[in-house]
Structure formats: C-alpha cells, structure tokens
Length: 378
Image (cartoon, rainbow, N blue to C red; front, side, top):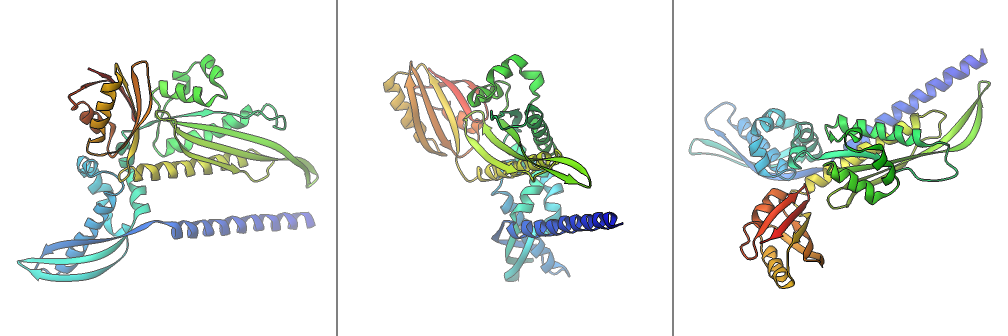
C-alpha cells in the first residue's frame, strides 16, 4: 500500500515538473521574440465607412512587407508573389505586436495614415521558413549528416550505437524542417567513409564532392555514472553528451557549434532529447545567418587559373571596384593560380555576371557551387 502511494506521489511530481517547465519555456520564448518598429504609410479610398480601417490595414501590410525585405531580397518576394500573398500577407494582423497612428488625412479622394508598427520578426521569419522562402533565398542548399565520434577509454563500449542514434535524430529534425538531405549510402562508399573517419577536413571534402553545401558533424558519448536500486531492481545510470557542428563545405566555415549534456538516465531518451534540442538550436542559428545575409556580405571563395602576377594585381583592382564587393582578400598565389576570398552583397550568380563582365583580363567560369567560384583568365 505504501509503495503504491509513493508511486502515485512520484508520478504527480513528474507531471507537475513537466507542466511547469513547459509554461516557463513558452514564457521565455515569448519574451525573447525579436521585433522591429517600422514607420510606414497606408492609403484607402476616402468616403467609405471603413476608409480609416482599410488605410491602417494597408499600412500594416506595408510594414510586414518591409520586415520581409530584411530577411530575403525583394527580387525573391516578387518572384514568389503568390506564395507571399497566400502564406504571409493574408494574415498581416498576426505579425503586428502593436501600432499607433502618427497622422491621418483625407485628401484628393484618398484616406492616408502614417503608423508606427511593431512587427514580430520571429513570427514573420518562421512563416517564411514554413513557406520555403528562406530555402529559396539560399538556392535550396543540400545537407549531409555524418558522425565524428571521439576516442575515449571511459566511453561505454562500443559507443557507435549512441552516435548513430544521435545522428538519426538530428537528420530527422532537419528533414522535418524541409532541408534537402544527401543520402550517404547512395553517394559515399563504406571504404571512403572509413578512410575519412575522424578527419574533419576529409569529411568536409567527402560531403562537398556529393554536392552538399552544409555538413552536420554529430558526436554522442555516454559515461557510466552510478547504479541505483529502484523498487527492488538495479539500474545503471549513464551520463550522455551530444556535440553538433554545422560547416559550410565550400568555405570550411563553422556556422554553428554546440554541445548538450543529457539528464542522467538508464535509457537512451536523454541522448534523443539532447540531439533533438541541439538540432533545433542549429537550425535556428542557420536561419538567423541566412536572414542576416540579406543585409550583410557573404564570403565567396574564388580561384583563378592561368594568371601571372602583373595581371593578378590589375584584376584585383577591377574586382574591388565591382558594385556590392565590400572586401577582397588574396589568400595565395602559386603555380599561376590566385586564391581569393570575396565579401559580396548578393548571390553567387550575381557575382559571376559581374566577374565575367571584366574585359582585361577576361574571366571564363569553369565551376561554381553555392559559395565557391572557379575561373580561368583569358
């Protein structure tokens, strides 16, 4: 009888902790939501019963459109006008946290208002992500998930099952968010994967050769912590830790790195939960980076073959004068090849069009990916 009561108390306690954690989590998310105040104007036909309301709604719509322009470029919004209207602008009020009317007037048959609206950027971005607009902004990047387990004598043997389980959960989270996945089994032989195992640069090269623009490296470890006796049964309790890194295969740049310790547990649930939490944090970081790319320069790696040093200096000067180029860094010049990093505000396609417009020396593009460009001087 006493044991039954103890179990009931335990279950009630676990339930209350879970509910409290959920409430706190929701409150924290709402408090952390990013917003932006936008000054905008709206107009409507005058002389109608709803003229003022229609003008305010038009101003709200304009504020949301302006907010979208800080997340993706205007050209993309125009190209996907039907999706934007259906998925985003049809529910404008849901993105407005608050607003105030600064001025209003009726003139020449129009009712005009100027408002100061606070737009929920987080919600706008989430819905743009759901509509696939952020993916299109980055030209639908492909992603590969690989494991990179550590070697540690304290780890529970064999250990591979834990890192594979973590990688499976991570892959599932990215798939749910509509990332395009590259299947390892279809593109990389077991022999090549074994040869690259544990070597970060080799794994990046493997992923890049399959066409993946992003590589997610996953690791999961599990240590024995203690043994407990619960209701007459023995349980081994383990401590787990998950590590996750997201790398641009074209540049080798790490765009997310995080680790998470799971709660001590006898089951694999702690591994699954920590993997899921890290994967969601990685996606959030990736989307924030993509959003900021609209207003910030992206780094492209440019390799130019058949160059002599005099032509190299002349070409550098012309590239620096290209509209949208913030900086140009020469990384190496050897065997007639120049290697550069270009900070450019725009897409790779836009940059290539401007590079091929250079006349002396002219450039012929021989290869490209999302953030790498290969060319030959003519």
